[in-house]
Amino acid sequence: MLTEAHKEKVLDLPSPILTFAFILATLYGAAFHLIFGGDAKRLALFLLASWIGFGLGQIVGITFGIDTYLIGALRVVSASMGSIIALIAASFLTSKRLRKRPRPTR
Image 1 (tube, rainbow, N blue to C red):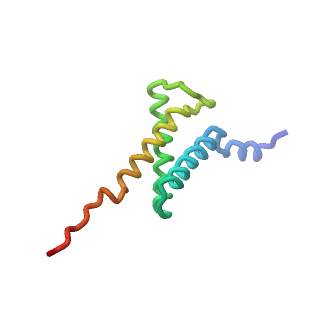
Image 2: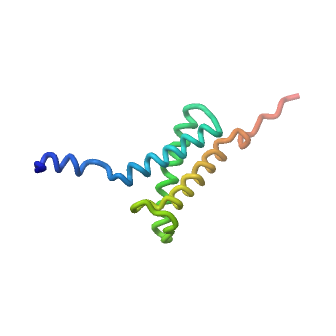
Image 3: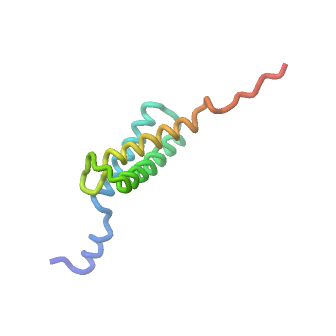
């Protein structure tokens, strides 16, 4: 039998879907960093962008009823697309091509 203290500890654990979503979004961010490179700051940026994009994609999937591929309550397609879009936006906004080079003085 479960005691009250044990029941409280069980209730404090994150759900398996939340854990899986966190792992999947982390893998997307790490893979993006592996492909496009960068320092530790960019890795942190890509992870954060992936987590936020994954969450926003999940919300968009719930709002618009996108039920293409579900794992429990997780809308994998819309959440993954949100993560990928956020990663591309983060990469574009932090790319060195956007920074203006100062013109050499003559």
